[in-house]
Image 1 (spheres, rainbow, N blue to C red):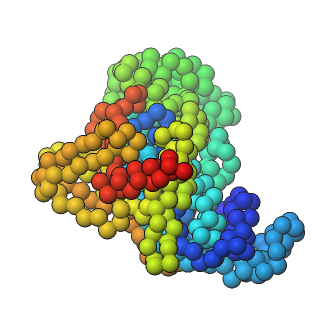
Image 2: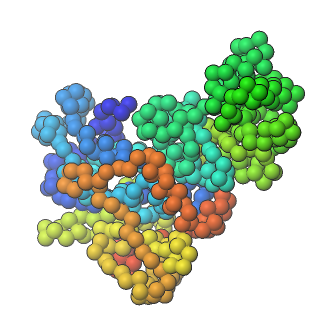
Length: 484
C-alpha cells in the first residue's frame, strides 16, 4: 500500500474540469482552495488534524504513468493534447497546512492550496480522502482516551476496519489521538509505533483445560502475561486459574513485570471489581485488569463512573470505524483567484444555510490563548499579512452572526500562527515528525482545552472568529451578491 500509485485516486469530474480549464482558460491562472470541515464529529467540541504526511507523499508522487494515460484515453472523453499535457504533469504550487495532532475547529482551513487552477482542482479528492479519514479516527481516539482518564487505550480494530488502508492508516491516526499501542503489526512497522496484544479464546479452547493454556502462555511470555479469563466462567474458573499461574510464577522466581487478566464479555463493572478483590486477596495488587468488548467513549465513561476496576482498555470496532459518526465531512472550496497584477481577488460561496457560506480570501489562522491560564480562548481567521499586537485590544467578529463580537483586553492574551508551509513551488519544505512525536504534541494540544470543551456530551463551543478586515470583505461580497 505504501508504494501504491494514487494519481488516479480522484473523481472523474476533477479531470474533466482540468481539461475544461486547459481548453478554455489560462491554464496558469493561480487560485486558492481551502480544505476545512463544518461541524465537529461525534457531537464533540473539537477535532484532531491528521493525515498530512500521507498528503505530502501523495503530492510528491503525483505523476501520470503511461498506463494512466492509456486508461484515460480509453474513456473517449479526453483529447490528445490534454493527455499529452498529463505526461509531464507535476504539482508546482504552494501548500500550507495545520500540523498533524493540532486541535482544530470548524470552518478554519486545515489545508490551503495555492496553485494553477488545474493542479489545485486535481488534488481535491485525494486531500479530502486522506485528511477526512485520519482526522476522524484521531478525533474518535482522543475522545476515547479522554473518557479513560489516564488509563491506556489499545487500538485493535484491524479486523473490523473497512479494508487494509483504513486499518493501517486508522491505526496511525488512533496513535496520534492518544492510544498507547495497536494490534496492527503492519502499522507498527510502517510508523514505528508500539504493537500490543494478548491471545484469543481459541488459544484456551485448543488446550485440554484452561489452566494448561494459561500455564503454557505464561511460560512463553512471562514478561507480558495478560490472560483472557472469560472463555468458560470468569469468576469460578478464569480468575482462579490465572491466580494459580501467577502464584507458580512467583514461587519459581519469575519476575511479574507486566501481568494480569483481560475481560471480554459480561458485566465489566461487576466482574472487574470481583476480579480485583480476588487478585488483591491472593497477593497480586499490581495485576493489570484490562477489558474489551464493543467499547467506546460513552461505555468507558459509564464504567469509570461505576467504579470498574479496569486500568487498560482494548477498543476495536467503534474506534477504527468511528461507528457513531462514520464521516468527517471535510470540504474543499475556492477562496480566491489571482488577477493580472498578482493580487488575490476573494471569492465566496453562498448558501441558504449560513454554515455553508465560505470565508473568502487568502487567509491564515492565529490561535489565541488566555494569558493567565494558557488555555485556548478562540481561533482568529485573518488575511495573510495581518499583524496583531497582544498588548493591544483585539476585536473578534463572528463569521455567521454579525451581532456577536468578542473584545479581548490588551495584555490578557497570547497568539501563535497555526499554519505551516508544506510545499514551496512544488517542492516539499516540511519534515513530518514521527507518529509518536505527533502523539506527544497532540496530548499537549488537548491540554490547552478547557474541560468544558472536552466533555463528551454538549461541550462548550470554541469560537472561530474573523478579523475586522476579513469580516468587512465577507460582508462586502455578500452585499454585492445580494444586489445581483
